[in-house]
Image (cartoon, rainbow, N blue to C red):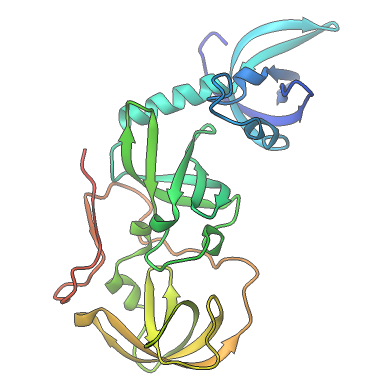
Length: 281
């Protein structure tokens, strides 16, 4: 309490007033509802942000001590710990910085992640990977420990924006794992009149000729006919249908630390411009 240190304990329960009880060494502390999350007191955060913490670790500071039925009960604040963490992030983080995060919630438009002390940010679905997906659950599961890149810092509204696709490799880095003549598994991500795009990795897709085995979101095995870096194309032939996976495959990160100034997806000498990400202060 004297030093303002940020501690961590397990939220044991949430009472009818939405106060949290938290394990704190030999004590059981209390986090009042208004102190349980940033934005609760202002009505900007829903109470589900409190209820969903039961049984999980929470960060907090010790704000005071009170007696209750002959017991000493520490009064705690998760909101203050989040404020301290957010102020540090806004002051010291820069666009392009790679950070660890934990997936907390998935919505059709993106993945919410904890970036420290319960501070939550959003990775929009368009920034999760190069290959388009119908829902973030195609890449993530709640509880996954992942990496993300700071896309921008909004000091006025105290928000941190994230991206993710830049960590999953360029076209060349991904295509380097394959060669013509290989047969590999993939996922159908787009049906077109001229064929179907089959995802080989989250940041790499090839074009397959039409086949009765193709259906949106289905897994198939494909034969790699050709890899054309100058056109950023991979030609595929569908071999067989495969059973679906129960959970997303583990992600392969090409970068997990440091800072990115510029990221270019297209390979050198490619006729297509391709996507680029430029991170500037």
